[in-house]
Length: 331
Length: 104
Image (cartoon, rainbow over the protein chains, first blue to last red):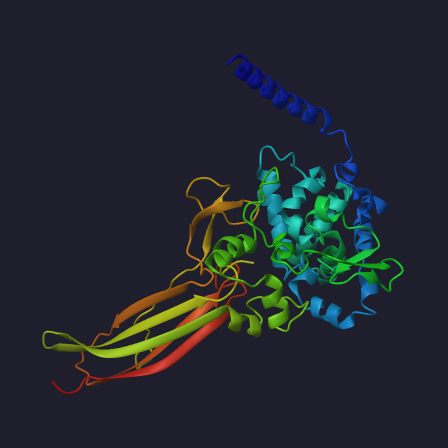
Protein backbone atom coordinates (compact mmCIF):
# COMPACT_ATOMS: atom_id res chain seq x y z
CA UNK A 1 0.00 0.00 0.00
CA UNK A 2 2.66 2.59 0.82
CA UNK A 3 4.35 1.84 -2.54
CA UNK A 4 1.16 2.57 -4.48
CA UNK A 5 0.79 5.95 -2.81
CA UNK A 6 4.31 6.91 -3.75
CA UNK A 7 3.62 6.03 -7.36
CA UNK A 8 0.67 8.43 -7.49
CA UNK A 9 2.73 11.26 -6.13
CA UNK A 10 5.48 10.68 -8.67
CA UNK A 11 3.15 10.73 -11.67
CA UNK A 12 1.58 14.02 -10.62
CA UNK A 13 5.01 15.57 -10.24
CA UNK A 14 5.98 14.45 -13.74
CA UNK A 15 2.89 16.09 -15.21
CA UNK A 16 3.64 19.39 -13.55
CA UNK A 17 7.22 19.33 -14.78
CA UNK A 18 6.16 18.71 -18.34
CA UNK A 19 3.81 21.65 -18.17
CA UNK A 20 6.58 23.83 -16.77
CA UNK A 21 8.90 22.83 -19.60
CA UNK A 22 6.34 23.89 -22.19
CA UNK A 23 5.96 27.27 -20.55
CA UNK A 24 9.71 27.78 -20.57
CA UNK A 25 10.08 27.04 -24.27
CA UNK A 26 6.98 28.67 -25.72
CA UNK A 27 7.72 31.95 -27.41
CA UNK A 28 11.47 31.53 -27.11
CA UNK A 29 12.29 29.46 -30.17
CA UNK A 30 12.25 30.81 -33.70
CA UNK A 31 9.43 28.95 -35.51
CA UNK A 32 11.82 28.10 -38.35
CA UNK A 33 14.18 26.45 -35.83
CA UNK A 34 11.45 24.76 -33.79
CA UNK A 35 11.24 21.01 -33.28
CA UNK A 36 12.24 18.79 -36.16
CA UNK A 37 15.44 18.13 -38.09
CA UNK A 38 15.77 19.81 -41.47
CA UNK A 39 13.34 22.64 -40.88
CA UNK A 40 16.24 25.00 -41.56
CA UNK A 41 16.44 23.66 -45.11
CA UNK A 42 13.02 24.73 -46.33
CA UNK A 43 12.58 27.48 -48.90
CA UNK A 44 11.45 30.02 -46.32
CA UNK A 45 14.25 29.11 -43.94
CA UNK A 46 16.83 29.53 -46.66
CA UNK A 47 15.44 32.76 -48.08
CA UNK A 48 13.98 34.29 -44.95
CA UNK A 49 10.43 35.50 -44.63
CA UNK A 50 9.16 37.62 -47.50
CA UNK A 51 8.93 41.30 -46.63
CA UNK A 52 6.82 42.35 -49.61
CA UNK A 53 4.20 40.72 -51.82
CA UNK A 54 6.70 40.78 -54.67
CA UNK A 55 9.18 38.88 -52.52
CA UNK A 56 6.52 36.33 -51.65
CA UNK A 57 5.61 35.89 -55.32
CA UNK A 58 9.31 35.49 -56.15
CA UNK A 59 9.85 33.01 -53.32
CA UNK A 60 7.44 30.54 -54.94
CA UNK A 61 7.91 31.61 -58.55
CA UNK A 62 7.14 28.56 -60.69
CA UNK A 63 7.65 30.13 -64.09
CA UNK A 64 10.79 28.08 -64.75
CA UNK A 65 8.65 24.92 -64.74
CA UNK A 66 6.82 25.96 -67.90
CA UNK A 67 9.70 25.31 -70.28
CA UNK A 68 9.61 21.55 -69.67
CA UNK A 69 6.08 21.11 -68.35
CA UNK A 70 4.07 23.36 -70.63
CA UNK A 71 1.08 21.01 -71.03
CA UNK A 72 0.84 20.51 -67.29
CA UNK A 73 1.16 24.25 -66.75
CA UNK A 74 -1.64 24.91 -69.23
CA UNK A 75 -3.88 22.39 -67.48
CA UNK A 76 -3.18 24.02 -64.13
CA UNK A 77 -3.76 27.51 -65.55
CA UNK A 78 -7.35 26.55 -66.29
CA UNK A 79 -7.99 25.36 -62.74
CA UNK A 80 -9.16 27.27 -59.68
CA UNK A 81 -5.73 26.62 -58.13
CA UNK A 82 -4.34 29.18 -60.58
CA UNK A 83 -6.54 31.92 -59.12
CA UNK A 84 -6.98 30.84 -55.53
CA UNK A 85 -6.96 34.40 -54.18
CA UNK A 86 -8.82 36.24 -56.93
CA UNK A 87 -11.17 33.37 -57.80
CA UNK A 88 -13.94 34.66 -59.99
CA UNK A 89 -13.74 37.91 -58.07
CA UNK A 90 -15.92 36.53 -55.29
CA UNK A 91 -12.96 34.99 -53.49
CA UNK A 92 -11.19 38.34 -53.36
CA UNK A 93 -14.44 39.94 -52.20
CA UNK A 94 -14.75 37.37 -49.44
CA UNK A 95 -11.24 38.22 -48.24
CA UNK A 96 -12.57 41.73 -47.75
CA UNK A 97 -15.73 40.66 -45.94
CA UNK A 98 -13.64 38.35 -43.74
CA UNK A 99 -11.85 41.53 -42.78
CA UNK A 100 -14.73 43.97 -42.45
CA UNK A 101 -17.39 41.57 -41.14
CA UNK A 102 -14.85 39.42 -39.34
CA UNK A 103 -11.66 40.68 -37.70
CA UNK A 104 -12.75 44.32 -37.48
CA UNK A 105 -16.05 43.41 -35.86
CA UNK A 106 -14.60 41.04 -33.26
CA UNK A 107 -13.79 42.46 -29.84
CA UNK A 108 -10.64 40.47 -29.23
CA UNK A 109 -9.01 40.18 -32.68
CA UNK A 110 -6.82 43.21 -32.13
CA UNK A 111 -7.85 44.60 -35.51
CA UNK A 112 -9.63 47.92 -35.70
CA UNK A 113 -7.83 49.21 -38.76
CA UNK A 114 -6.22 47.59 -41.84
CA UNK A 115 -2.83 48.54 -40.38
CA UNK A 116 -3.46 46.24 -37.42
CA UNK A 117 -3.66 43.08 -39.50
CA UNK A 118 -1.05 40.37 -39.08
CA UNK A 119 -0.37 37.19 -41.01
CA UNK A 120 -2.12 35.23 -38.28
CA UNK A 121 -5.39 37.07 -38.91
CA UNK A 122 -5.37 36.08 -42.57
CA UNK A 123 -4.48 32.42 -42.16
CA UNK A 124 -8.12 31.45 -41.69
CA UNK A 125 -8.48 32.12 -45.41
CA UNK A 126 -4.84 31.91 -46.46
CA UNK A 127 -4.30 28.46 -44.96
CA UNK A 128 -5.76 27.17 -48.21
CA UNK A 129 -6.09 30.12 -50.56
CA UNK A 130 -2.48 31.26 -50.03
CA UNK A 131 -0.66 28.92 -47.61
CA UNK A 132 2.69 30.50 -48.45
CA UNK A 133 1.53 33.67 -46.70
CA UNK A 134 2.74 31.92 -43.54
CA UNK A 135 6.21 32.46 -44.99
CA UNK A 136 5.81 36.23 -45.02
CA UNK A 137 6.08 39.02 -42.47
CA UNK A 138 3.16 40.96 -41.06
CA UNK A 139 4.10 43.79 -43.45
CA UNK A 140 3.04 41.51 -46.30
CA UNK A 141 -0.29 40.84 -44.57
CA UNK A 142 -0.94 44.59 -44.43
CA UNK A 143 0.14 45.02 -48.05
CA UNK A 144 -2.13 42.16 -49.10
CA UNK A 145 -5.15 43.66 -47.34
CA UNK A 146 -4.36 46.99 -48.97
CA UNK A 147 -4.41 45.37 -52.40
CA UNK A 148 -7.71 43.61 -51.71
CA UNK A 149 -9.30 46.87 -50.56
CA UNK A 150 -7.88 48.70 -53.58
CA UNK A 151 -9.35 46.09 -55.90
CA UNK A 152 -12.78 46.34 -54.33
CA UNK A 153 -12.68 50.14 -54.23
CA UNK A 154 -11.73 50.24 -57.91
CA UNK A 155 -14.58 47.88 -58.67
CA UNK A 156 -17.14 50.01 -56.84
CA UNK A 157 -15.85 53.20 -58.52
CA UNK A 158 -15.72 51.63 -61.97
CA UNK A 159 -11.98 52.35 -62.17
CA UNK A 160 -11.18 49.63 -64.71
CA UNK A 161 -7.49 50.43 -65.02
CA UNK A 162 -6.79 50.13 -61.29
CA UNK A 163 -9.06 47.11 -61.03
CA UNK A 164 -7.18 45.25 -63.77
CA UNK A 165 -3.83 46.22 -62.25
CA UNK A 166 -4.83 44.86 -58.84
CA UNK A 167 -6.45 41.80 -60.35
CA UNK A 168 -3.26 41.00 -62.24
CA UNK A 169 -1.26 41.20 -59.03
CA UNK A 170 -3.69 39.02 -57.07
CA UNK A 171 -3.67 36.43 -59.85
CA UNK A 172 0.05 35.96 -59.18
CA UNK A 173 -0.85 34.75 -55.71
CA UNK A 174 -1.98 31.20 -56.18
CA UNK A 175 -1.49 27.50 -55.53
CA UNK A 176 1.25 26.89 -58.06
CA UNK A 177 3.80 24.13 -58.78
CA UNK A 178 6.05 24.91 -55.83
CA UNK A 179 3.23 25.13 -53.31
CA UNK A 180 2.14 21.57 -54.04
CA UNK A 181 5.40 20.05 -55.26
CA UNK A 182 7.55 21.52 -52.53
CA UNK A 183 6.02 23.52 -49.70
CA UNK A 184 2.99 21.30 -49.03
CA UNK A 185 4.41 18.08 -50.49
CA UNK A 186 5.02 16.46 -47.13
CA UNK A 187 2.48 16.26 -44.34
CA UNK A 188 4.34 14.14 -41.79
CA UNK A 189 7.55 16.14 -41.58
CA UNK A 190 9.03 14.33 -38.61
CA UNK A 191 8.50 11.03 -40.44
CA UNK A 192 9.40 11.97 -44.00
CA UNK A 193 11.52 15.08 -43.51
CA UNK A 194 10.86 18.73 -44.18
CA UNK A 195 10.52 19.73 -47.84
CA UNK A 196 13.95 21.04 -48.69
CA UNK A 197 14.75 23.99 -50.93
CA UNK A 198 15.98 22.79 -54.31
CA UNK A 199 13.82 19.67 -54.29
CA UNK A 200 10.79 19.02 -56.46
CA UNK A 201 8.54 16.39 -54.94
CA UNK A 202 6.59 14.07 -57.20
CA UNK A 203 6.55 10.43 -58.16
CA UNK A 204 10.24 9.72 -58.77
CA UNK A 205 13.73 10.16 -57.35
CA UNK A 206 16.76 11.45 -59.19
CA UNK A 207 18.09 14.51 -60.92
CA UNK A 208 15.79 17.31 -62.01
CA UNK A 209 16.80 19.56 -64.88
CA UNK A 210 16.44 22.92 -63.16
CA UNK A 211 19.39 24.76 -61.60
CA UNK A 212 17.22 26.07 -58.74
CA UNK A 213 15.57 22.68 -58.15
CA UNK A 214 18.15 20.08 -59.16
CA UNK A 215 16.69 17.20 -57.14
CA UNK A 216 13.54 15.15 -57.72
CA UNK A 217 12.22 13.19 -54.79
CA UNK A 218 9.17 11.03 -54.23
CA UNK A 219 6.48 12.53 -52.07
CA UNK A 220 4.91 9.71 -50.07
CA UNK A 221 1.54 11.44 -49.99
CA UNK A 222 1.18 13.33 -53.27
CA UNK A 223 -0.95 10.54 -54.69
CA UNK A 224 -2.99 10.17 -51.52
CA UNK A 225 -6.18 11.87 -50.41
CA UNK A 226 -4.52 13.38 -47.36
CA UNK A 227 -2.43 15.57 -49.67
CA UNK A 228 -5.59 17.29 -50.92
CA UNK A 229 -7.06 17.13 -47.43
CA UNK A 230 -4.57 19.76 -46.28
CA UNK A 231 -6.94 22.31 -47.80
CA UNK A 232 -10.11 20.52 -48.81
CA UNK A 233 -10.50 20.03 -45.13
CA UNK A 234 -12.06 18.23 -42.23
CA UNK A 235 -14.29 20.89 -40.71
CA UNK A 236 -13.51 23.85 -38.44
CA UNK A 237 -9.78 24.69 -38.50
CA UNK A 238 -9.45 24.26 -34.77
CA UNK A 239 -5.73 24.97 -34.78
CA UNK A 240 -6.53 28.65 -35.37
CA UNK A 241 -7.26 31.10 -32.55
CA UNK A 242 -10.53 31.91 -34.34
CA UNK A 243 -11.46 28.85 -36.42
CA UNK A 244 -12.82 29.15 -39.93
CA UNK A 245 -14.66 26.55 -41.96
CA UNK A 246 -14.74 26.49 -45.73
CA UNK A 247 -14.28 23.24 -47.64
CA UNK A 248 -14.96 20.07 -45.63
CA UNK A 249 -14.58 17.55 -48.46
CA UNK A 250 -11.82 15.54 -46.81
CA UNK A 251 -13.92 15.03 -43.70
CA UNK A 252 -16.79 13.81 -45.86
CA UNK A 253 -14.36 11.59 -47.80
CA UNK A 254 -13.06 9.96 -44.62
CA UNK A 255 -16.20 9.61 -42.57
CA UNK A 256 -18.82 9.11 -45.26
CA UNK A 257 -17.24 7.89 -48.52
CA UNK A 258 -14.60 5.58 -47.02
CA UNK A 259 -16.94 4.61 -44.21
CA UNK A 260 -19.42 3.39 -46.84
CA UNK A 261 -16.88 1.30 -48.71
CA UNK A 262 -15.38 3.86 -51.09
CA UNK A 263 -11.92 2.87 -52.27
CA UNK A 264 -10.74 5.65 -54.59
CA UNK A 265 -8.93 8.85 -53.80
CA UNK A 266 -9.18 12.44 -55.00
CA UNK A 267 -6.45 12.13 -57.61
CA UNK A 268 -8.00 9.05 -59.24
CA UNK A 269 -11.30 10.81 -59.93
CA UNK A 270 -10.26 14.43 -60.44
CA UNK A 271 -6.99 13.87 -62.33
CA UNK A 272 -6.70 10.41 -63.87
CA UNK A 273 -10.19 9.06 -64.67
CA UNK A 274 -11.41 12.49 -65.71
CA UNK A 275 -8.43 12.92 -68.00
CA UNK A 276 -8.13 16.46 -66.68
CA UNK A 277 -4.70 16.04 -65.11
CA UNK A 278 -3.68 19.23 -63.32
CA UNK A 279 -6.82 21.00 -64.52
CA UNK A 280 -8.62 19.85 -61.41
CA UNK A 281 -12.27 20.72 -61.75
CA UNK A 282 -15.60 20.21 -60.10
CA UNK A 283 -19.22 20.65 -61.19
CA UNK A 284 -18.59 23.15 -63.99
CA UNK A 285 -16.64 20.51 -65.89
CA UNK A 286 -18.98 18.32 -67.89
CA UNK A 287 -16.89 15.23 -67.28
CA UNK A 288 -16.90 15.78 -63.50
CA UNK A 289 -20.60 16.74 -63.43
CA UNK A 290 -21.48 13.54 -65.29
CA UNK A 291 -19.30 11.43 -63.02
CA UNK A 292 -20.64 12.87 -59.80
CA UNK A 293 -24.36 12.21 -59.92
CA UNK A 294 -26.70 9.56 -61.27
CA UNK A 295 -29.97 11.39 -61.88
CA UNK A 296 -33.25 9.84 -62.94
CA UNK A 297 -36.73 11.28 -63.26
CA UNK A 298 -39.82 9.12 -63.76
CA UNK A 299 -43.27 10.51 -64.46
CA UNK A 300 -46.45 8.55 -64.01
CA UNK A 301 -49.70 10.16 -65.16
CA UNK A 302 -53.04 8.93 -63.90
CA UNK A 303 -56.71 9.85 -63.77
CA UNK A 304 -57.67 10.80 -60.24
CA UNK A 305 -61.29 10.34 -59.16
CA UNK A 306 -63.01 12.24 -56.39
CA UNK A 307 -66.57 10.99 -56.52
CA UNK A 308 -67.75 11.75 -60.06
CA UNK A 309 -65.10 14.39 -60.61
CA UNK A 310 -62.03 13.35 -62.54
CA UNK A 311 -58.75 15.22 -62.69
CA UNK A 312 -55.36 14.56 -64.20
CA UNK A 313 -52.74 13.71 -61.69
CA UNK A 314 -49.05 13.27 -62.11
CA UNK A 315 -46.62 11.43 -59.93
CA UNK A 316 -43.01 12.47 -60.32
CA UNK A 317 -40.15 10.53 -58.80
CA UNK A 318 -36.68 11.99 -58.77
CA UNK A 319 -33.75 9.90 -57.64
CA UNK A 320 -30.17 11.03 -57.27
CA UNK A 321 -27.13 9.05 -56.23
CA UNK A 322 -23.97 10.88 -55.32
CA UNK A 323 -21.11 8.97 -56.90
CA UNK A 324 -18.45 11.44 -55.77
CA UNK A 325 -16.05 10.73 -52.94
CA UNK A 326 -17.44 13.55 -50.83
CA UNK A 327 -20.69 15.31 -50.09
CA UNK A 328 -22.35 17.57 -52.66
CA UNK A 329 -22.10 20.47 -52.24
CA UNK A 330 -18.60 20.68 -50.83
CA UNK A 331 -15.17 21.49 -52.07
CA UNK B 1 -47.26 23.95 -66.79
CA UNK B 2 -50.63 23.56 -68.41
CA UNK B 3 -51.39 23.89 -72.12
CA UNK B 4 -51.75 27.68 -71.81
CA UNK B 5 -48.30 28.01 -70.31
CA UNK B 6 -49.46 28.77 -66.79
CA UNK B 7 -47.40 27.32 -64.00
CA UNK B 8 -49.70 25.23 -61.87
CA UNK B 9 -47.21 23.59 -59.55
CA UNK B 10 -43.73 24.36 -58.33
CA UNK B 11 -41.67 23.00 -55.47
CA UNK B 12 -38.04 22.89 -54.46
CA UNK B 13 -35.69 21.01 -52.19
CA UNK B 14 -32.39 22.20 -50.77
CA UNK B 15 -29.41 19.93 -50.35
CA UNK B 16 -26.61 21.45 -48.31
CA UNK B 17 -24.64 21.24 -45.12
CA UNK B 18 -26.01 24.07 -42.98
CA UNK B 19 -23.02 25.62 -41.21
CA UNK B 20 -23.30 26.76 -37.63
CA UNK B 21 -22.31 30.30 -36.68
CA UNK B 22 -19.22 30.17 -34.47
CA UNK B 23 -20.04 26.61 -33.41
CA UNK B 24 -22.95 27.60 -31.20
CA UNK B 25 -26.74 27.88 -31.13
CA UNK B 26 -29.13 27.14 -34.01
CA UNK B 27 -28.03 30.10 -36.09
CA UNK B 28 -26.61 29.49 -39.54
CA UNK B 29 -23.21 30.97 -40.35
CA UNK B 30 -22.63 32.55 -43.74
CA UNK B 31 -19.06 33.67 -44.43
CA UNK B 32 -16.30 31.08 -43.96
CA UNK B 33 -14.84 33.28 -41.22
CA UNK B 34 -17.91 32.70 -39.03
CA UNK B 35 -18.75 29.14 -40.03
CA UNK B 36 -17.80 26.39 -37.57
CA UNK B 37 -19.77 23.19 -37.18
CA UNK B 38 -23.14 22.25 -38.62
CA UNK B 39 -26.70 23.02 -37.61
CA UNK B 40 -28.03 20.41 -40.02
CA UNK B 41 -26.90 18.54 -43.10
CA UNK B 42 -29.21 17.81 -46.03
CA UNK B 43 -26.38 17.48 -48.59
CA UNK B 44 -26.13 14.61 -51.04
CA UNK B 45 -23.78 12.18 -49.36
CA UNK B 46 -21.38 9.79 -51.08
CA UNK B 47 -22.96 6.58 -52.27
CA UNK B 48 -26.35 7.52 -50.90
CA UNK B 49 -29.47 7.54 -53.02
CA UNK B 50 -31.79 10.47 -52.44
CA UNK B 51 -35.37 10.04 -53.57
CA UNK B 52 -38.06 12.69 -53.91
CA UNK B 53 -41.69 11.94 -54.66
CA UNK B 54 -44.15 14.56 -55.85
CA UNK B 55 -47.87 14.11 -56.40
CA UNK B 56 -49.39 16.85 -58.50
CA UNK B 57 -53.12 17.13 -58.86
CA UNK B 58 -54.23 19.39 -61.69
CA UNK B 59 -57.43 21.37 -61.53
CA UNK B 60 -60.13 20.26 -63.96
CA UNK B 61 -62.94 22.69 -63.35
CA UNK B 62 -63.72 22.85 -67.07
CA UNK B 63 -64.43 19.13 -67.39
CA UNK B 64 -61.58 18.48 -69.80
CA UNK B 65 -61.39 15.08 -71.49
CA UNK B 66 -57.75 15.36 -72.34
CA UNK B 67 -54.88 17.11 -70.66
CA UNK B 68 -51.30 17.86 -71.57
CA UNK B 69 -48.74 18.99 -69.05
CA UNK B 70 -45.16 20.11 -69.49
CA UNK B 71 -42.96 18.81 -66.71
CA UNK B 72 -39.58 20.35 -65.97
CA UNK B 73 -37.28 19.10 -63.21
CA UNK B 74 -33.98 20.87 -62.68
CA UNK B 75 -31.01 20.36 -60.43
CA UNK B 76 -29.16 23.61 -59.79
CA UNK B 77 -25.83 24.20 -58.10
CA UNK B 78 -25.92 27.57 -56.38
CA UNK B 79 -22.38 28.35 -55.21
CA UNK B 80 -23.51 31.52 -53.46
CA UNK B 81 -26.89 30.24 -52.33
CA UNK B 82 -29.05 32.18 -54.75
CA UNK B 83 -30.01 32.39 -58.40
CA UNK B 84 -28.47 35.85 -58.80
CA UNK B 85 -24.82 34.85 -58.55
CA UNK B 86 -23.31 32.27 -60.86
CA UNK B 87 -26.09 29.66 -60.74
CA UNK B 88 -25.18 26.44 -62.52
CA UNK B 89 -27.77 24.15 -64.10
CA UNK B 90 -26.44 20.68 -63.36
CA UNK B 91 -29.26 18.46 -64.61
CA UNK B 92 -32.54 19.04 -66.40
CA UNK B 93 -35.46 16.82 -67.33
CA UNK B 94 -38.35 17.92 -69.52
CA UNK B 95 -41.31 15.94 -70.75
CA UNK B 96 -44.79 16.57 -72.02
CA UNK B 97 -47.20 14.21 -70.34
CA UNK B 98 -50.65 13.51 -71.72
CA UNK B 99 -53.53 12.20 -69.65
CA UNK B 100 -56.62 10.74 -71.31
CA UNK B 101 -59.62 11.72 -69.21
CA UNK B 102 -62.31 10.36 -71.56
CA UNK B 103 -64.66 7.50 -70.75
CA UNK B 104 -66.36 6.60 -67.53
